[in-house]
Structure formats: C-alpha cells, structure tokens
Length: 415
Image (cartoon, rainbow, N blue to C red):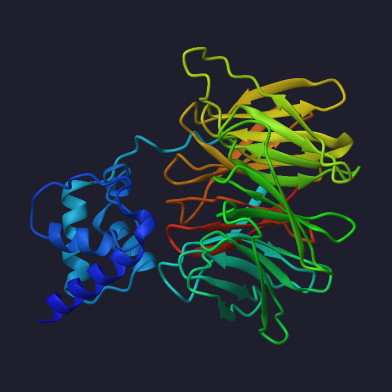
C-alpha cells in the first residue's frame, strides 16, 4: 500500500511538470526497481539524465538520491541498488584537473525544499546569499555564518530562472514560467509582479541593472531583449537581429554598454541602452560542417572592457577585444565535451566551470600567464549554471541537481 501511494503521488506530480515531458525520454534496463526509478526520477527530469550519468557506487547513488528527493525505506535502497547495478561508477567523464598555487575552500548547503533545482545565487552586502528555486517557484535566502535558511514562495507558475538585487536590497527575479518579472521585498515578504506587455515574450531569463537603475533582461527562447523601469513599471521589448539567437547571459561594461551572449548562434551582441542600437560580433566557429556548434551561454568583463565568454558547444573560453574586434580562444582543460557554462571575473582572473564533467569542475584562468588551475566540486554532479563574485572577492555557486548552494573562499597561494 505504501509503495502504491508513493507511486501515485509521483505520477501525479510528474504530469504537472509538463515542460519536462517528451524530452530526453529513454528506456531504462529491465530489472527489480525499474518501475520505482521511473516513477521517482521523471517527477523532476527525464531518464536520459540517468543513462547519460557517469555512474556511482551504491553509497554515492544513495547520497545523490537523498539530495534530490526524500524517499522512504526500503524504496530508497531499492532505487539505489537498481542504479548501482545498471549504472556503476566509472571515470569516463572525470575532469582533467590542473594543479597550481591558488587554494580554495568549498562550503555547500542543501536547500530546505528538495527538487527545487536552486540556481543563479548572489551575495548581498549584508552577507546573505540568495538563490532562485526554479522548480519550486521560490526565492531562497541563506545566512552562511549560521546556516539558517528562509524560502519565499512565489506564484507556482513563476518558475524563476535568475535573480539580481537592487541598491535597496530588493531581490528581482525573472518569471521564466509565466512571462513576468517580479520584485521581492525581503523586509516585508511582499512581491510585486510585472507581466510582459507582449504575450510572445514568454520566458524572461537573466536580469541585470544598469547604472541609472533600469532593469534589463534577456528573453531566451522568445529571442528578445527587455527593459523595465522600476519607477514607472514600463516595459519595453525588442527582438534580436539574428533569428533564433536565444539571448542568454547579460552584463554591463564600464561605459554602460550592455553585452549579451547568444546561446543559439556563434555571436555576442553589444547594446547601447540609450539608442537601443545592437551590434553583433561573430565568434570563431572552426567547424564548417556545424555552423551553429557554438553555444555562448554566459559572459564576463575584465578591466579595459575585455569581454570573456564560455563556448559550451565547443569546450572553449574566449575573449573579445571590442576596440579591435579581435577574438582569442583557449580550449578548456577537459576538452571539447567539457561544456563550460558559468563564468565570472575576480581581480581580472577568469573563473568558470566545466559542467560536462563528473564531478563538475571549477576552473581558474589567469589571462596574464594563460595558465589554468582546476578543482573538483565536492557535490559535483552538476551543474553550475551561473556564478557571481561576492562583495569580498569570493564566489557563490550552486549545484542544481543536488539542490545545494555554495560559497568558494579563494586564497592567493598555498601558504
């Protein structure tokens, strides 16, 4: 009876996660526990994430399952046993780790609501770490000193993709699931929602504030760029010049220019916020048989307004000099399938992750010496989708699959 109730509840929940259905569905091997695994896993993701995993020991599978969903015994042991038999540990996707003189310390916290897939964390000047719980339609707050956490519930349809804070300490989010932008006041818990004026703008993605206080944001699959004026609530939208560009990451340079990464094309765009003029720069794509093999997910900017990017499709990081239009690229240490994803700059040092590896690797790149150093992330079954610098020069990260948010403390050398 317990087993039947458990499966019924999971099936009900999985049908509610409609956006996950029909994508990545593959047949699992037959064996005791298959039905339980299918019922438990498709509640949040499709089965290709299992078949595409590197595999783990029984202990590691059980640990991973416990980070994703709270299963009662003996169901948890049955699921772990099935996965261990059919998907045992291997090192095929282990990252190529590079040693060096910098030392880091990882701290990770499991969020209260499992299955929410936390993402895009940031740290505010008061030391609090915030994140977007996309699958849980919530905004989370962590006190890294005490470990205390709070969660603020949003409209269940919101599914926030990313967050950013304003100077007053409010947390703004992009309602990726219901075509909105919202503002959370942490002091009162009140939420103000701004619907998109055009129903075609379905999926607001990543936001950023310009110096005048306007909120700009990408609208990925709708292929748009948006601007919200907080004082008036006015929203303006503009389609990108390249079809199916899928604008993704967004940053502001020292001149106030807006830079946008194209996930759907091998291009980076610069936007003048005054004129809305868009200039596109085509990134290198050396494979003529795959003209759209490049996937520029996120960007970051060093001094001199040099624009850095991760090319997930080709396993490279790159740099654009906007003054000359010159590009330079470096292959990531773990190779063409390393899938660099997030990127951030701290003191002109480039930090990013190799999300295609297991464990997910954190990578440091020094542009002056053109040298790499990397570390395996402790809970690293992936993936870091965004990372941000903290006010004191460290990094906040997350692992969406294991429902963790983290803080990386950086030391200059192994002294």
